[in-house]
Length: 252
Image (tube, rainbow, N blue to C red; front, side, top):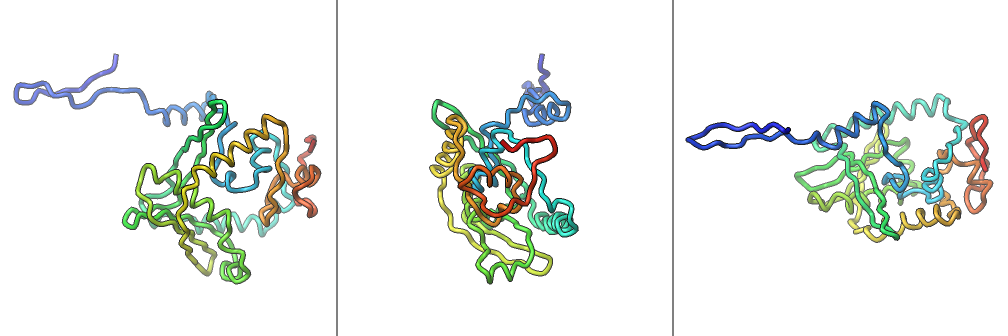
């Protein structure tokens, strides 16, 4: 029986607190740590993969083993990881930071997909969502027209669609930072409710129909861990794969 805490005040018994069930998030966390989780990763998408390549998202949904990047252990790649960690400390500039959200998307046949997102920063004074992207040679990339990236713009607009139902959002900012420079872009607000639903439905339908969507080739392909598989399927990566299947794992 749940306990209720009350106090006698002025002749009246005033209820102050009541014992309730432990919050679901804490229970889920403990279950995961103890190997008891029944979490099903299918039909659950991160915002990053949603705005990325559909073929890659399908492979992840299907649970296909990832390959090993040939440059995984180079000094440059290891420094890039650490550099990103250093720069990401800028998120502490705001008290509202690393805010999680789950957004539910109705699909065909009464199915529901989940989109999981995490905001880097939110400025409550100006009602601004701020997304931090750590990279290198920021000014050079801007001069070459590589920044801002379309998928980064989409990512912020998806965040806006997800979070604006629960808190005021008036501005969207992307912050690009390297060890020398910080450059910020303001992104146009767009309601992507229909885009999100269509995007996910296409992937879910591909799973059911056993079809492989075209690869959406970009500069990010060199970091993908499905390069060999993608290049062999066709209508995707055409450059030499920079990843290789792990030992004892087939690509077909």
